[in-house]
Length: 244
Image 1: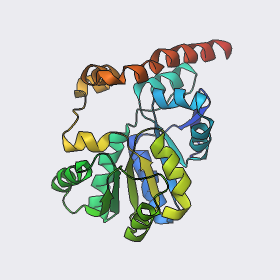
Image 2: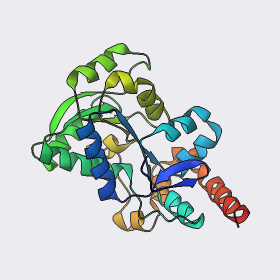
Image 3: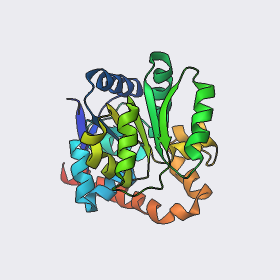
Image 4: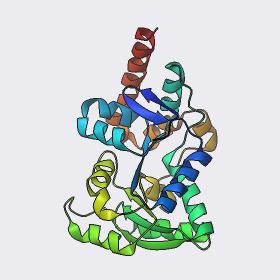
């Protein structure tokens, strides 16, 4: 983690901008040391309250970003403002752009069969020069050594892991030393959005902090997960009150 960080309900979050986060990722690539980046939204923070394994992983991450208006709001409410939201989808686009510019090799892991390939096709058109080191869908056993070997032998600089929270963070953390990839980042549903399978909220909703409501309307099955949001707000308000 950076020296400039704040704690949101027990989860340390780095106070960095999108550009700073991308620069730090590039530093990881130069150092060649496996580094885990987590993009923490309110759902992940609340899950970490109950899942000690996930909480421990977040404490060990080299970089934890405020992915979600809720986490940015919470940090400010608790007295340590985060400069801006650094969404996993947006950081992925920035890393792909820089990869195309500097020749970084990217491996795509996760999502349903065919999704990564579609996302790669769109990314290659959008970011000319982008090098794909390899891809693998998310339908594999957590202990599948062939997948680890595939990634290790591909020698990517960046591994985009779209297995969903907390599976992606746990898998990356467990296999970090074996993979030997400089930048390991969980990207959730990013491949689905890039492939055009799932639509992202309009920009005005993103800026207004309403992306969660768009997700709920377009994906009603997320209702149970979204119930974490009001609990998150209450928990933050309690924490802010007791810290007075």
